[in-house]
Image 1 (tube, rainbow over the protein chains, first blue to last red):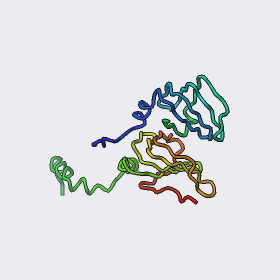
Image 2 (image 1 turned 135 degrees about the horizontal axis):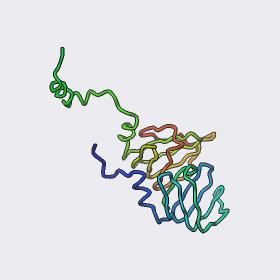
Image 3 (image 1 turned 45 degrees about the vertical axis):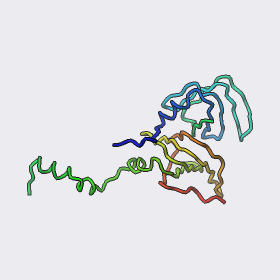
Image 4 (image 1 turned 60 degrees about the vertical axis):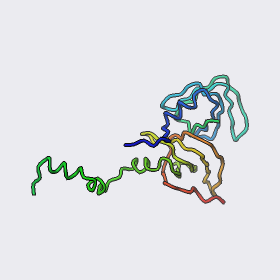
Length: 78
Length: 104
């Protein structure tokens, strides 16, 4: 099957945002912003300089944080 | 009428035979949507509308120019994002070319 040139799979996306500032929204509605240091196919995520937002308000800061992938709703580059 | 293996192969390899194929697998339908806008409804009261850039076997999706909606009660847009990777785990329904929920 021919692949459209603009096709971008989840793996391509993850590789492209490594090392960037990202926004992560969990299923619970809690948001995290931080520097994406590594991740895997389960969407397990390691963040640096992490900020935790509850209802849009900054609640906590963490130097390093690990988020288990099953909680992740989506990841977005910022 | 019995056909030889070669004759049958020739028959099924014609473009006409391929075009007449009635089966389109669900994920083939979604594959056809790559590059166009799609409406994603989650198991929870959340919906996303954006351009589909790609997806994988778990139906994790990469979306561009995304609007996120909360559909509890009246629908309202709660966020806009340039590009996201949406976890496929909580996806319920995909609507090709979807305009999204009516926003009050």
